[in-house]
Length: 294
Image (tube, rainbow, N blue to C red; front, top):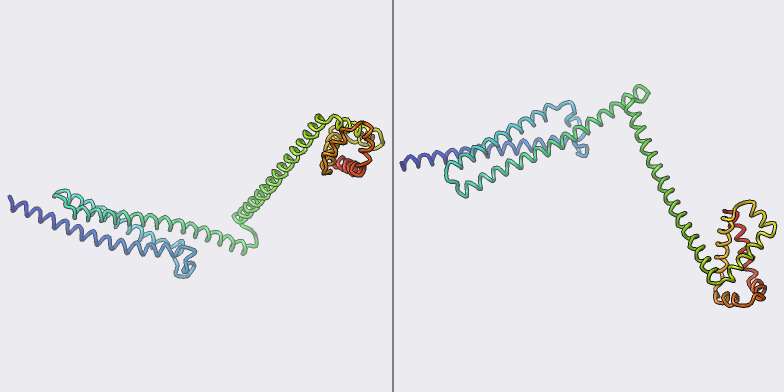
């Protein structure tokens, strides 16, 4: 019985070593084939130095890389079968740490080779499609130049570029319109704030409100006021008066002097107009120009 077990273990060891030797041989062949396949894929890359040379592979001559892909796929399947046989051989006997590590290493090598093959194959397919597209476009251009006309594909490409440029121009116009809208909104809010401040000021100082009323009556009692009334409504007049009054009050630095003047008697109003006659004249001119702009 002891001699039978020894002979079985020797037979298992021999088969294990044979399988490992076969696996190393297939792995070496795969390494060489994958290197050649990667060089073939690099020759399809337009950024490579040898692209476009007479010795570079053409799109139509796909026999070389097709046969190479089939051979690499066959070697990967063979290595997978050897790894499965090695796993069964290791399971029949008591697996040691060395056997387990060697089996794991062979599986890792198979996984790396498979990933490299899939990655190179995907890159090669993309570059082949790119080369086919360039070749077809070049043929269309040559045919168009030879016939003196324009092929439908070139015409469609030009139409597509024109549409893209029009879309970009429309986006720019929309952006400018949005910016203008934002500026107008900010100006509207600014005018609203000015009107609110003037209203609060009129409520705080009743004499200012009376002064604004007299000023509006003065405007409407002359031919200029009649022409203003004919041109537009009361809304424009209110906006013009509000803006001009705000400019009038903000032009003077000594605001407290205004307050002291407003607190005087009504007989001081002529002296008030006399002191600030220049500001009133300038403000009236600004009021006229502002109304004309509106």
